[in-house]
Length: 100
Image 1 (cartoon, rainbow, N blue to C red):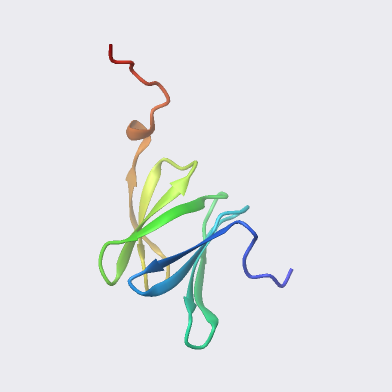
Image 2 (cartoon, one colour; image 1 turned 180 degrees about the vertical axis):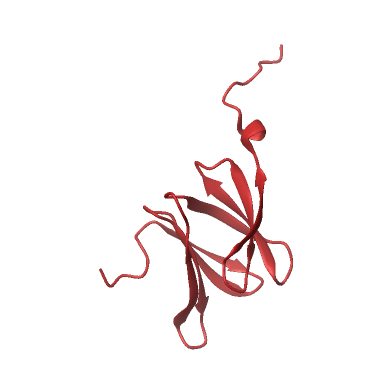
C-alpha cells in the first residue's frame, strides 16, 4: 500500500512540531515537516507495540506511553529512537484493593 499512515492515528503537537502516532498493527511514530509537507522521519515500533501518547521532556526528548506494553519510553525527537524506558508492570497490576 502507498498509504503512509493507517486510519488509527493520533496527531499531536510536541514543542511546536507535528507528530503522528500510528496505532494499528505494527505501530510507528513520525515527525512531519509542515513547511515542506513531508514526513521528516518515521520510526517503526517492534512487536506490534502501539504508541498511546507523547509528552515533551525538553527540546530533544519525549516520553511515550504505550498500549499493552508495561513501559514508558524516552525517545529522541531527532529520529524517534528509544533512549531508555521505565518498567511500569508494578504500576499496571490488574488486582485492585478495595478500601472500606
